[in-house]
Amino acid sequence: METPTLLYQQMIRNIDHARKLVSNVEPNGCKTDLQHLKLRSFVLLTHSIIEEYIEDLGREVAVEARKEFKKGKITKALVALISGTYIFM
Image (cartoon, rainbow, N blue to C red):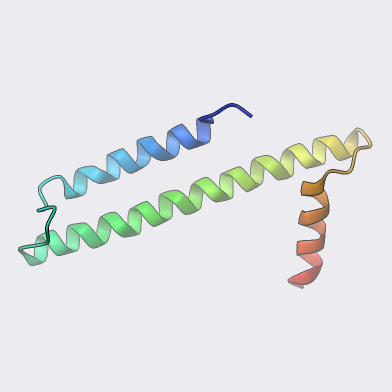
């Protein structure tokens, strides 16, 4: 796997875009309600961006595990995906 991956680079880019929300917020604390709202929005957006990255990474692993299974190979990722499905049923 290449480092950093395209998914990781996209996540960093998205966080940089979200950081624009807090560009005028004091680093030592919020002085107004608007700054506080911007900071909370940034935290929420960053959480969503990281969550999306993890989901996309998991999807890539699942797709690759399926491709390997079609070739007759059972990977650790496939076993984890299948056993996780039965655990959470």
